Image (tube, rainbow, N blue to C red; front, side, top):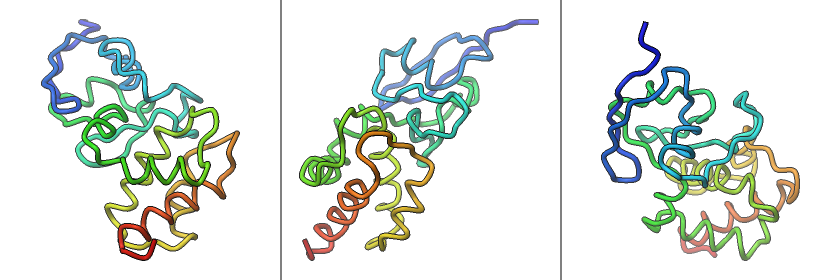
Length: 160
């Protein structure tokens, strides 16, 4: 049995073709093979959200998905989302509202928050808390993060 498979996918707008071990998870592929280290490896059980990436428009846990499962998909990492400018309003609000400290959870929080704001024009604080509930933060606490996401939504709607 062959323990490697060829995969083709698009990562941050770039076509990638690689031969990978069948049990290599997506976050390790992105970090080790492509040098995209913005998504972090935390719990390795899908509980902390540090490994979050966007696959075909949905935020997923990169530690729970094998790289071979990403064959034929479009993947966006924190690097791609930042370079495109898509996260700029959120990044500014996170800075203004002191919603980051060590930065370990920040990439997953930003991608999750962006996905929420793509779905909801003006989410209330409960909706924001629910959306980020799968992302753990051990430094900042959640109040400032919720404030930053709410600030971004209000600015976008012209209320900020």
